[in-house]
Length: 346
Image (cartoon, rainbow, N blue to C red; front, side, top):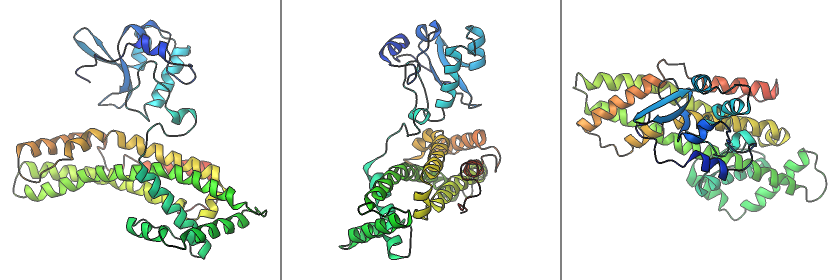
C-alpha cells in the first residue's frame, strides 16, 4: 500500500475538467469527489482496489468493500463504471476519478507511447518482408545492421514497390495503382507492430534482471546464505522469461507470411493487439524491479543482497510456481476463437 497518496489532484476538479462519461471515469457518488483516492491493483492479490487516506491511515478498499460501505449499487452507473476501471487497470497502473478511459477499451489502440526507433524498426522489417516476397523468397530480418543495409540499397524502393504490385494482384486488385491500397495497409500494419518492437526493448530490460542474478551467482558462489536465494530466484524467473519469449516468437511466426496477413487483416490486427495488451499487462508489474536493478554493480555487497531478496519476494509473489503464468496458452486460445481452423499454425 502506498505510504502517501496525498498531493493528487482534487477528484471534483478532475470530474469537472473531464469530458464525456463515455470516454472518462466520471463518477457521481460523493465519495469519489470528497476523498483524494485512486484505483490500482493490490500489491499482494493483484485485485482492483481503491487506495485512499483516512487521516493518518492509508486504506486499500476492494471494490466489493467499497460498494458495500458506501452503498454503491453494482447495477448503478457508478457500479458499472467500476467494472470498466477493473478492465482499465490491465493497461495502466493507476486510475483517478476524472481520468480518461484507456484507449484499449475505446478503440483498441494503445494508450502508451512508442519512440521513433521502434517505428523505424517496424517499418523497415515489414518493407523488407514485402520486397523479399516480390523477389520470390519472403523473409523476416531481425538483425538491425542487416535491416539498415537492405533498406539502404539503391534498388530497395523498386523491389518494395514490385512486392506491393504482386500482393495487389494476389489480392485480386487488378486496376492500375491498386498497389497504393496495399501500401496503406502495410503502413497500418507497421504501426501495429511498432508497439511490439517497443515491448521487445522493454522485455530486454526485464531480462537484464535474470542476467544480473546469474552474474551475482558467481560473485556469491561460496556464500551459504545468499547463493541459495539467488538459485531460488533464478528457478522462478525462468518461467515468465520463457513465456514472454514464447509470445514474441509466436506473434512473429503468425505475421511471417504477408499475403495471409493482408487477406485476413482484421483478425490479424486483433491478434497483434491481444498479444500487445497481454505483454504490456504482464510487464507493468516488473517496472519497479527493473528500476532497482538497472545500475547493478556485480560484487558481493549489502545493497546487492537487498536486491536479491527483493527479486525473490517479487518472483515468489507473482510467479510462485513454474507454469502458473500461461500467457502463450491464453493467446493461443484467443487465436483459435478469432481464426477458427484457418491456416495460422506457427
